[in-house]
Amino acid sequence: MKTVIVTGATSGIGYAVCCEMLKLKYQVIGIGHSGEKCISAKKQLEDTFPDSGIIFFHADLMQQTEVKRLADALTEYLDHRCEGKLYALINNAGCVRSWYSTTEDGYEQQFALNHLSPFLLTHYMLPYLQKGNGRILITASNSHKMMKMHWKDIMYKKRYNPLMVYKQSKLCNMLFAFALNDRFSSSGIHAYGIEPGLVNTDIGSKQTGVLVKLIWSLRKKSGVSPEIPAKTYGWICSRESAPQGLYYYLCQEQEYSRQVTRENADKLFRLSEQLCGITFGR
Image 1 (cartoon, rainbow, N blue to C red):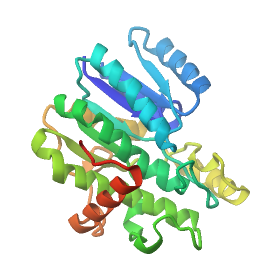
Image 2 (image 1 turned 60 degrees about the horizontal axis):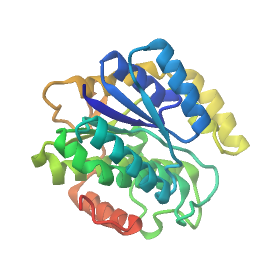
Image 3 (image 1 turned 90 degrees about the vertical axis):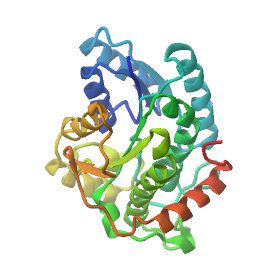
Image 4 (image 1 turned 180 degrees about the vertical axis):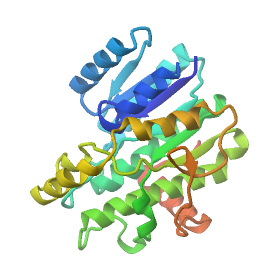
């Protein structure tokens, strides 16, 4: 049975993706921020898919020490239970913040969770993905098309704008997927940005201010249920031959921003290595 990892798996898109993967008979490893919510999500999924054998790990993915701790636990599990192979890593966890706030590493929280977290976790999981000819899926957003990298102040310490920071983090997702394909497609790995569209989730209501919560509570009413975008993740993973595009919406390849270039991707990749204190893939 092929193994997939899903971050942000206890609610919203991540939970729906877990359901979709279990329907497709994958072994699913769910990652959630709260241990309590992981227990609850695991029980709900086991009630619906009693023979699934789903397992959850919890970690605060904003913090690099927590990503490393999680990676150690995943490494042990994959080595002993999955023949050291990982078929798909679905980097879905994300956040919105109304004000400038930092992680224990001193990094702005949206940038840390939405970009550096998948960057670092993918680094640790890369040997297992290479052994499994794996696919890396990152929850992106159409908003990346409305943004350029803010290289001079990438974490917006000055003039913090939550919407701009979110859009930039989604551009980072696309640049990271581009860079992964550029570097590792020859070893059987394929990376994708997945556009979920407007989805009725609580992402805009978690640790945000009154105004953001109000706007999101009104906007999300027009969104589709998470089960709709989850099908695209399932479609990408279930193709016998890896789809060759970079950016997908409703199982169809889409155009992406002209800002997604090798120059920008390489610049972000090198910066991310420095911020994470790693040499990627080594």
